[in-house]
Image (cartoon, rainbow, N blue to C red; front, side, top):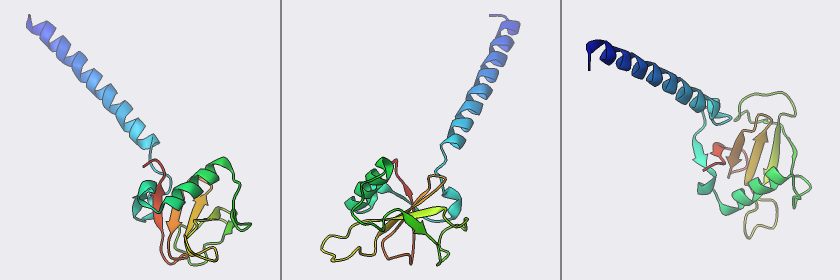
Length: 132
């Protein structure tokens, strides 16, 4: 093969690599986890209590929920989540087996589809990756 053909193939290969890299970068950017700019530790939904997954499925379906408090505005009074306007966040009960009341566990869902979990009634939160 002549040197011109080798240079042509090399240039075509380089262009293909650049274009492929651009598409991969765009795909990675588009699939960023909502809320990943919160600075909170990220946890897979599958690592949380099983009831958290059950609650997440109900949120996705729009209910029905066991508590009439599910879906109410979470006001973020403790300021543990990123500051957002008034009714941005909604909270949902994650049942605690053996508890006679709602317990301390909640999922908090934001309008940009970010999902947070607290197991200690708003003292601390983690960002939840529902896809894992």
